Length: 447
Image (cartoon, rainbow, N blue to C red; front, top):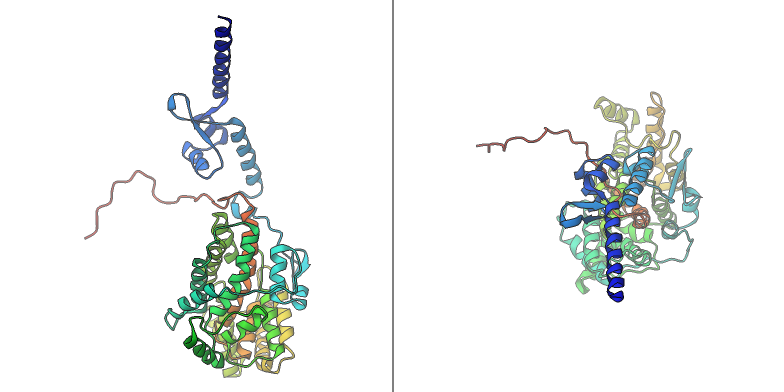
């Protein structure tokens, strides 16, 4: 009897504890009221991993941990105080833009770009460590797949089209692409950038050399050489002009200057993709998709065409007047983040100054700036500088966009690395519905 009493007492104590714990949990209605939301929103929190639910007694309804609910209440209050929208709460330790200057991890970005090559600047953004001897090499399988995919595109494909296809093809060859650990992501990044560059079709003599290499094997254009800087490998994909060391250095400077620029539209797209735990190749594809818009990556192409027209007509005044008459803004001037001069443009234009090939395009750019300044105080931005670079060396109008995309891949990876450390799916704002209120009758089909 004693043993029975002890056992019954133990079971009774456990049952009492379980019932007490269950009684402390909140019902769906209570949790929703505490959070100030509707039950549907409450379950949306559960599906997004912000709350956990448990079936109530008898399997009817759900219950919630009051401490977990209260923690979410406090968090929602903090987020509302900081602006409410998820995009206003993205903290980053990568790029600071302040007083007509910008900084990579606290270091003057222009000085960093002037002193070190693009690969070293990329490593600095990714790791906070300066590695001047770092090399980026494309794996043979990834490069071959990317080149075949790019070669299959129609002849009128743009450079961003080719880069997106190359990124997807390279991803398929990487079996560890879903490993989002820091070391794995860094390894993928160091392989992806050279793959993107070397998958682009070469021009001029380089194109003829690539055709010969294609006849010998699938790796059109030959194998990747990590000892050759990214800028030197990109040059023959942009122009048939033979480069001197100074010209390649200017291209390298452009890549380093453009490596990151806080939360531009394409970078925000990358952060959203990374928040959903997309792999590095996919987040770069997201960035390239946003970059393809005419208001982002394509801006340098507009400046290229404008400068070409100025040189052909011999007058910046006439070209500027045509733009304004048509209701278009003059491309390559002004930047909303820089009240004064864009430091990237200043650095790139200064590097182009000593090059004889750039003399005419530089003069055209200065004339555009001077003519416009008679009516409005707008300074050259980096798109105008990219236009000078592309015009000076016989590059196509989309060359600046290509340079921008390759350069910004480093920043996109850096932002993805940051976002992988955050709570998943945090960048999920709620829409403000403006459509007709339901319920509505089922519409009749049109004949």
